Length: 412
Ligand code: AMP
Ligand code: GLY
Image 1 (tube, helix red, strand yellow):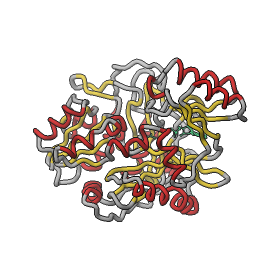
Image 2 (tube, helix red, strand yellow):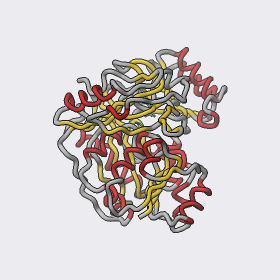
Image 3 (cartoon, protein in one colour):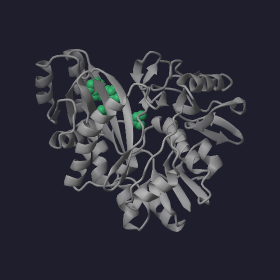
Image 4 (tube, helix red, strand yellow):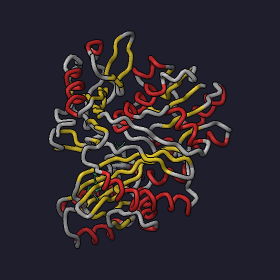
C-alpha cells in the first residue's frame, strides 16, 4: 500500500512511526512532514487540496490519513472521495463540529450532550451588554479556527470587554472572531478521549491527559500542548461511564439524526467537575500531543483499525496496561515569538525514548529547529514514574539554543 499522511507535527510522526513496521506498506508520503517523516518516507511540499488530490491520483495512493483540522474543514475528504480516493476523516459538513464553535454548541444543545451553558453572539454591542450583567469568571471563545488561541477565561468585565473588542472589532483571528460564544466557566480537571468512527458506531480509546499550559504547575499561556500521559491517571471508570452516557451516546445519536456520520476520528475535550463530566469541544481528528502517548499503548494494528472503520466494520481496541509519557521540547518563547534554525544535537544519546521530531527539519545532514514545538520524547513503563524518568533522562543530552520544556509532566 501507498500511504499519504497530511500534517507536519509530532502527531504525524507518531502515526508514521506506528505504521512503519507494517509490511503491507510499501511507501509513505507526507505533506509536508518533518525530520522524522523524512526518514520514514518522502516529504512533499504541497498543502492545497487540489495539488494533494492530483498527487494522490497520480501516485495511486491507497489511503490518506489527515492529521490537522484545517484541511478537513476546507473539504479535503469531500474532494478525495469524489475522485475515488480512500481517506480517513470527516467531510466538510461534519468537520464544522470543530470548525465552528457556534455550530458545535448548537449541536450539543440540540442533542442533549452535557456541556457548559453558553450564548452565541454575532453583534458586538449585544455581546457587551450581556457580559456587563454577568458574574465572573466567564469564558469567551472565537467561533472559528484560531490555532487553539481563541479561548479566553475572563476574570472580570474589563477582561471580557477587551476580549470581545479584540475578537469582534480588531479581528485578531480574522473571520474566526466574527461570532463569539460566551460560556459559563467550569472548574475541574480536563481529559481527552479520542474515538474511531466506522460511520455507525464510535470506538473510544483510553483517556489521555494533555498539559496545555506553557509553565510548570499549569501556569502561563495556553499552548498546543507541552506533554501528555496515557492513560489519564484521574479519569476513573465512573467518569468514563458518565462520559459514555451523557456525551458519547447523545453525540452518536446526533450524528445519525443530522446525517453527519463519518469515518474518522472524533476527539472529546472534557472537563470533569463536581457535577460530572462536561464536553468543552469536539475536534474531528487525533489530538497532539495525546496521540504520541496513546499510540505506543495501542496493541491493534493501526492500519487494520482504520481500514476496518472505512469498511464500516466494528473494531475491538486493545490497549496495554503500561503507562506512556510524552515530553514536548520547545523553542524558547513559544507560544509567543521564537527563533528557528538552531541545530539540535545529542539525539543519538537518547536511550529509552522514542524521538518524534515535529518542528524540526534536515539542513544538509544536520537537524535544525523549524517550529515552536520542536520534538517529543515518548516512553512507556509499568508506572508513570518509570516512564517519566526515561523521558527526562533522555531530554538531558538533547540540546538546541533556547530549548525549553516543562519539568512536571507526569509528576503526580
Ligand atoms: P476549547 O478549545 O473550547 O477546548 O478551549 C480551550 C481550553 O480553554 C480548554 O482546554 C480549557 O482549558 C479552557 N476552557 C474552555 N472552555 C472552558 C470552560 N467553559 N470553563 C473553563 N475552562 C474552559
Ligand atoms: N491537544 C489538543 C488538541 O490537539 O487540540
